[in-house]
Length: 259
Ligand SMILES: Nc1ncnc2c1ncn2[C@@H]1O[C@H](COP(=O)(O)OP(=O)(O)OP(=O)(O)O)[C@@H](O)[C@H]1O
Ligand SMILES: [Mg+2]
Image (cartoon, rainbow, N blue to C red):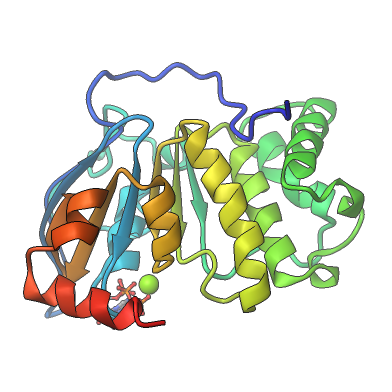
């Protein structure tokens, strides 16, 4: 048996949902980008967020770890209200792993250094402990031979697996993904999805913006469909694929499932 991808042993503070959004609204100037978004992600749940371009998926997910401010409503992550002035946002963000479309590894640092920097700087781990955690996770994503390389020497799929390992090295309580495979060449999508599937099966709480419906079918508990800043559907996987209720979701599905 291989070591689990999720090395987190940290107990969670609350018994409620891991992520709870209630009536979240956000404006960019006059433009209302999110309207009354309400949903919850329970511990161990995998929720896929999909919807047309510009519907607010990235914005929604960035609000969860306060990379974007929002003006109305509330988001609570493991009992911590994100919009509360007393909340220590760096501390919260350290516990919420985020993987973006563009891997955002530090180009001037080796893979090993990419994996250890935040562990030492943010979590205060000593270098040996950080390296051993980083190497275990690098092995887990199948890349231990590449520790000394720089990001530019790896393929896109490999860099994205490093980015996932780097996020996991922080022992996150939840992982957020924003289209982690959409910038990859098709032959590399599978290797990244495999890592995500394994993570989901190990019980990681995940909120994933993705249009990879094969992934959604395999591991999602629920699918959220957004359009024009609203959560139009929030359904179990079977309901969503079986009988998505809204016309907008049906249209969207018929378009992406053609491919
Ligand atoms: N910093 C910003 N300032 C102003 N408007 C923005 C900003 N970021 C995003 N928007 C607008 O907000 C809307 C939602 O953007 P967002 O990136 O959340 O959509 P998305 O669903 O993730 O789209 P995509 O599928 O293309 O990634 C879009 O109309 C976008 O143009
Ligand atoms: Mg987006």
